[in-house]
Length: 295
Image 1 (cartoon, helix red, strand yellow):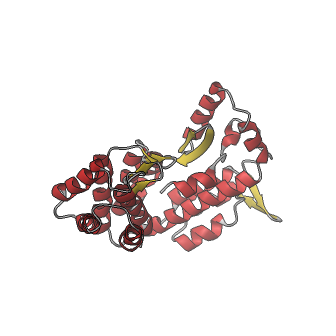
Image 2: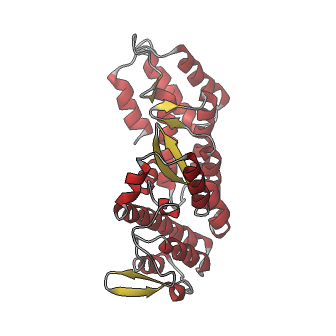
Image 3: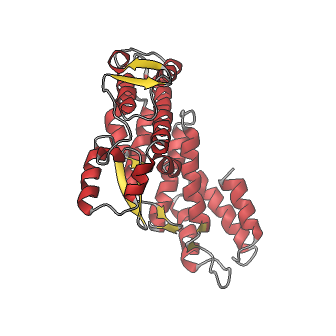
């Protein structure tokens, strides 16, 4: 749920502590040759996602003030929770667009970040970003930003459907414990198995959820990692190509603990496939994952 967003939003909002590339009158914004009165726009009472998208298209995607207006418009909208769900999808799309545009127009920010800002500057930046629901993190010396799902849940959850609230609730909980980094799984197999079951249950409970594809992608990511590992967390011994004993135990344990889960049938089929090859890796493993997991 977060990789593409993180790549797009990197360096976005860093202007909270670094100089912005251009100043902005908080009462107005410009896009092309037109001038938009942000104060007047923020008073609109929108009723559907199409209206919301059209209004957001009038905002300057290179300015942070546009995010404030987008948020206010969403909170002021006059619609039922399902319509608000679709508007929230529009809000997230706009958020990504602002991130991309702002980054393109602020190359100097990347240059300043490459100079390794002091710990105090980073601390102040984290505080500034928190007001926007943005987390500043780093990996192998590289800074990146990611949305704080708990912030989204707190600030928008009450306006959304039960399905979307539960979606954000699950995401908020998982975000507090990072799943993987640089091809290495960071959580125990039991925790990974729990996440698989959680997302399966969510998709079963809300099959018509507006962002069901994102839930499916999250489920597939976890299931793929559980069955086949990742680049730096291999389940097959690199020397023998045989399934690690610990991974075999984890798969068998999943079946015992989740007898009624649809995911158990996938795990059973995977083990049967491996049993036929004496638990050695073959190209059939990749074919299985493409057909049963990443379809």
